[in-house]
Image 1 (cartoon, rainbow, N blue to C red):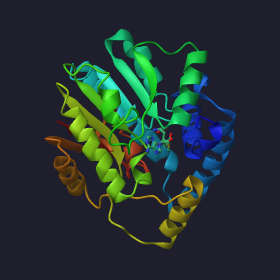
Image 2: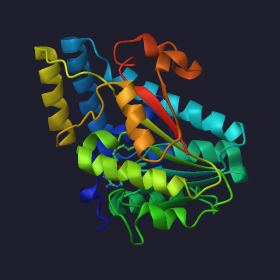
Image 3: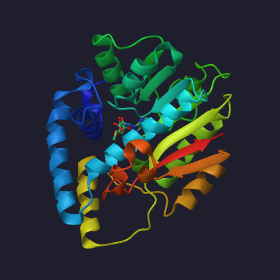
Length: 278
Ligand SMILES: C[S@@+](CC[C@H](N)C(=O)[O-])C[C@H]1O[C@@H](n2cnc3c(N)ncnc32)[C@H](O)[C@@H]1O
């Protein structure tokens, strides 16, 4: 189904968030995004008041951190192809294709409704090319035309390849998440070099009244339960190694050039950027 009604509201909200912070293009702005963006702003203010944690800082740190590591991977010659899973209305495919032109191939992917919507928006603005395309991909599919394996088969195995997930894994329960990491590890092993970049939130479950309220507000906003997956960075590293990655690094925003100051804020310090290589 490709109606906009089946698109997750958080995808509209985050799409507008990137635009509001000067990271995106008008071509990816939707009326739903503007509306939900206001609701997201109120949610952020409520959470900041209650817990001191800024969702804005957390999101900016994760997005800019992934951008920085992808830039490094491309500039060092390790990566020439990118598959972004659950890209939503993220500007990354647009911004990296604008910056690198034909030097990279960028495939943005999402579930059918969002993929069709985004493809239409970019197409209308003349922003797609053979090097920058949008495809349908269900991260939970093990096989078939919408699987990661099928999309990866359209790329050149002799080139270095990055797979990105941003803002996806916390919506998946542990078994589903493990399946996605296994598929990503197996897929990247088929390329000359493979790197997986993602946002993770390793932290011990501490229960305070403010955090309970924060969890409830988020659950209502995203219409579902969130899963944190790792208590510690070491757990994240072990899980990635078990998914087929040989080198795994966990970057704190305070240690990355583009997110150094964000990483010192309450919110920006909660996220980590995972860089797992095959
Ligand atoms: C919160 S949005 C994040 C979008 C984007 N990565 C960003 O940071 O702006 C989550 C996205 O995950 C997509 N999604 C949910 N389940 C998925 C699945 N099984 N396979 C692929 N994408 C999925 C949704 O359609 C939505 O676009």
